[in-house]
Image 1 (cartoon, one colour):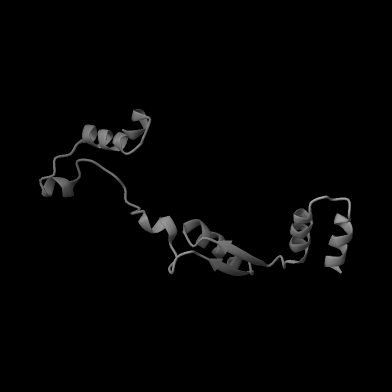
Image 2: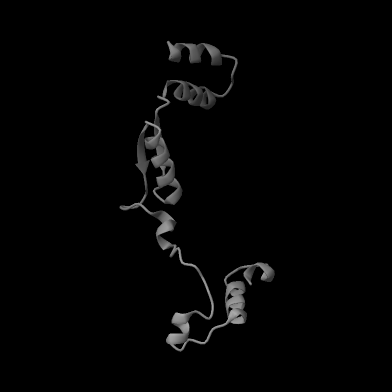
Length: 113
């Protein structure tokens, strides 16, 4: 059987008990199953990929809801001098946009323009 084969292959020459345990687990854990830790965008994407490929998955997250830091992202497209800003009397232009972007942590002004 596969588990016996794995045990024979790692033998007693390896000194690390932890490594042996990991190898045995890797050899015995079904390849069509996965445990994904983290329910953010990356974790959800990984879990979805497993399911799309016919596998079974358990998704673990430390929160009572999934989303992680991805829930904090607004997914907006930043712009300056928009119609909405003009209609609401908000003064803005490319220079103000660049300065705001640089304050936010951007290090290359040529990319912020």
